[in-house]
Length: 277
Image (cartoon, rainbow, N blue to C red):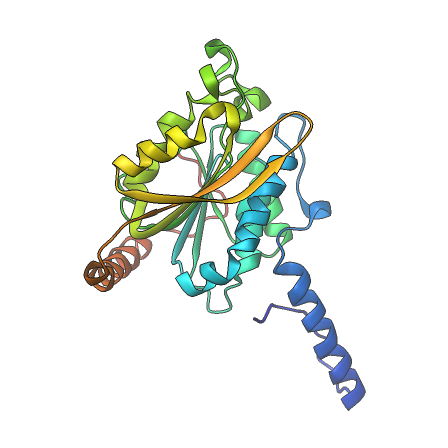
């Protein structure tokens, strides 16, 4: 996998070429593991990368070979915060041909701005949309998204804290930490393509087995990619995918490509697109 590396336009000797190739291999190994913490933008009202963020990034890294073979065309993070996850996904996948489109949403304008800065610092283009979950994208991206990543507000809190302004919205999950999760799942179901995958963080208190059953009723299989316990919580990163007949996959892939090309031909590649509802 190749990555863009700036080289001086001068004559160089063979040892220099070898040194450059060695540097390229080292940089490829580093960037394929995800976003670099020191390049992540920070703001007091934006959730910084923490144990749950790292667990989700590790899950994507553990599934990287499958993701590369999956060849997604459109990836989306719901609730992007600092932009650490969507940027990590982009650096893991690489895309010299610039065929993968990355989107990220957040209800917090400071988070939207942080994600833009984080992605730019890594040389990644992400369309950042200021919206609640993905409500402004639902119709335009319906059945088009191949990978969705979500680190939702999952902490059990009083319901009145759900949807508060600022950083509180990033963790306040209401009763059993499920208020926002239960709103996200049907939205994701609407967005995912037939070959679409969802990676989502959950807490034991969220009753992940129940979440899997609910998604199973919608036609999804699931498995835990990463399970991690900290002093305060037990985290699960669950992967969901549609159980689709093999005969349907080829047709779905062609239809999704056609819809994607048509939609993006009308979409201006702004660096920061705000869409309020």
